[in-house]
Picture 1: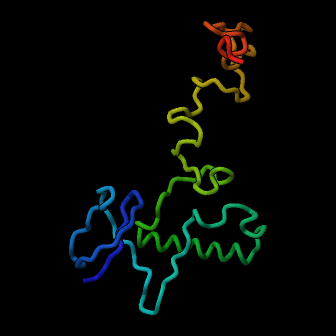
Picture 2: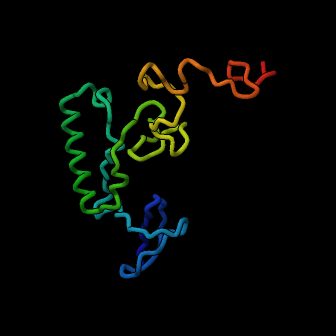
Picture 3: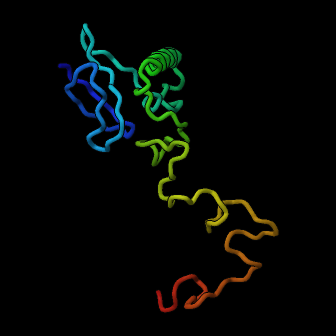
Length: 166
């Protein structure tokens, strides 16, 4: 019996020995349904799988300042990958647009719908937060300002620290 490689929607991979007609097994890690991953070995040796869009250069510098031959080769590689993903949709991976890929997101790009690093979940750009971000709210009133008056809650020394704190 042949050995097949499987992948679930969560990205877990595993191998299983089974017949061609056997039903696909559930993921042993999370229990989700799985798909067969195409074999990388062909009749004449190892097949090259083109890199996904995530692994392609994302910046001008990454394309050697737009080197014509390099960019042409990147386009050919991207087209080859697109055709492969049409035949094997399980290789497509996450298709959500990438909104940030530099700095702290270099290792794992930020995609549309992902939570922003360092920001609590559910805290998008709504007006219930207290940080300043450059736009006013009429009559010069920003977040946390109430007509030039400070809220002097209990135990406050005017600087925001509890009384007795140094």
